[in-house]
Length: 390
Ligand SMILES: C[S@@+](CC[C@H](N)C(=O)[O-])C[C@H]1O[C@@H](n2cnc3c(N)ncnc32)[C@H](O)[C@@H]1O
Image (cartoon, rainbow, N blue to C red; front, side):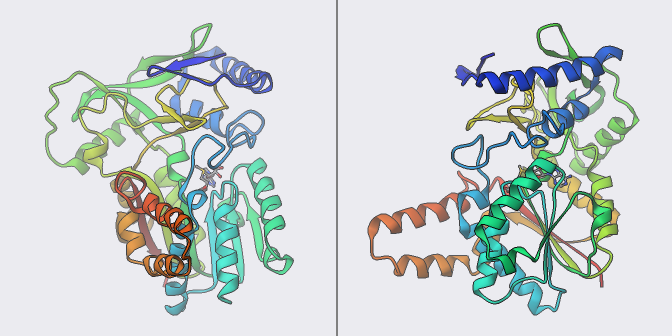
């Protein structure tokens, strides 16, 4: 198994990984015996199948040595920003629970609990809602190793909203929305009549795209996209790919119900943009991206179960669905704007002054730059704050 993408060769997985991927392909082929399946079902399987899925089986490797790197894995300064938000929330007398959704390796939880422990501001409970049992296990091991027992004792895992016993506090989700299964379609932007739903079939050697008429949900999603853009799109080019998250409204509605116990501030961090930018007429491949060992490409059929697949988050769609679910929208901004509005720049400066060694200073400055520079994570990564309760 090897794959050439965009002029470069992806590294070839080892024999064990190849065998695991083949088992996943066989699992899909059985499901496709009755016909092609929606792309969202394909993405759900390749990411979350409990034995063979990228997240579901714990295949994912986070960080510099893995397939991709997220903000909390890149720098503790990101988590310092969240600690700042926690202090604000506590000053406003929010209850003292923290809920983290989709905790990955557990890096953010470890750093946040260490920072809050040093400040004597620990939450009464740190709850992790994680849908991958394998990752929940890995998180528990990492947290237990890193944290003092009395701090670790405050952490609890749940795998479903219904298990949340919530009195209020702060909710964090970093790069969770972009890891949710999306539906795909090909259209001439702005023209719903040209839209074709893209399904996934197996062509004997590899997965292939099949076109179908959009179902009612997709028609409604396309109508909503056009309404959010609100002006005709000039599209001199041919059809382009596009995606939307079919589960967004349900997920936010579930969250709203689960948080009913008390006032909550919800921070959704992710990379994405506004509707008119996401559905631009020149995005031939849509916003779907795959990552394998830090190489990014656009073919979701390569190495099923071994590579990450993500799609940009349409923050206007999130806003709309969140309002419908009963949240108040308390701003959306770039990661740079957010972080520069916290006390993190001051902390960076204090740490720089405390380190006369130039090499250390350069490393710290670079860490911060990577979080805030528009060419790095500063602009494309965004944060939306929602409020609910009381
Ligand atoms: C891209 S990783 C991000 C991990 C971590 N937040 C970070 O920033 O390093 C996505 C995480 O969200 C989890 N996840 C995806 N969908 C979820 C859902 N609906 N509920 C809870 N966790 C979810 C995945 O299993 C994984 O832990």
